[in-house]
Length: 264
Image (cartoon, rainbow, N blue to C red; front, side):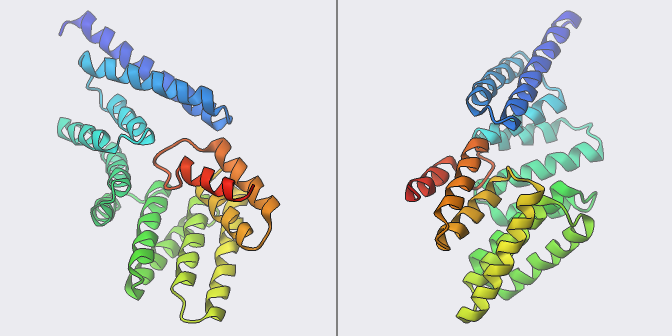
């Protein structure tokens, strides 16, 4: 590939990335329909750049992230494998790649491998992405197994995450889910009720830090529904619907619509 061909390919990659950034901005501003159209545009531009020979690590990593957002997890996984094989990455970039790869595995239902992957990444660095992702994985594992050892492992990680940043919305949300899951495995009704109250408290704290966080909105809406506060439940679900769109989030658009229908 000649010099001018390389410039053209690089320009195509940058156009795709810029469209991706614009889509993220539209999504943050609640312009969901416009954002979805822009995400699709970015996807097509990424494909064109890739087919033309673009193999820049940053562009391909962003491409994989968009694939995950759109639910293309198998394709994203293969692309991230390709990026890893290219080599030449700094440790920081490799860390980011491993975290993204673990999230992809998690959404594909490969939970134990996701945990193994991100724990390996944590040998290099531990940041908010590491803590929020691993916290989510470990809480989910504990909720599925019901094993005390799994709950203890999740709690230890969440406590470490809280020491890192006690105002992080994702960590507070993970604490909420941790206590909600514990309430479902409680030995008696009194313990379950206390654990539920603790879960609600953490979810409310997460909501104050990040009012657009879908998992928090969904959880609080369900709690409000259970408590008979239909008005607040509707308010929270409607807010979640406004910001929903990423398939990386375990709360799907269909789940939100189903809950909303139950509140009519």
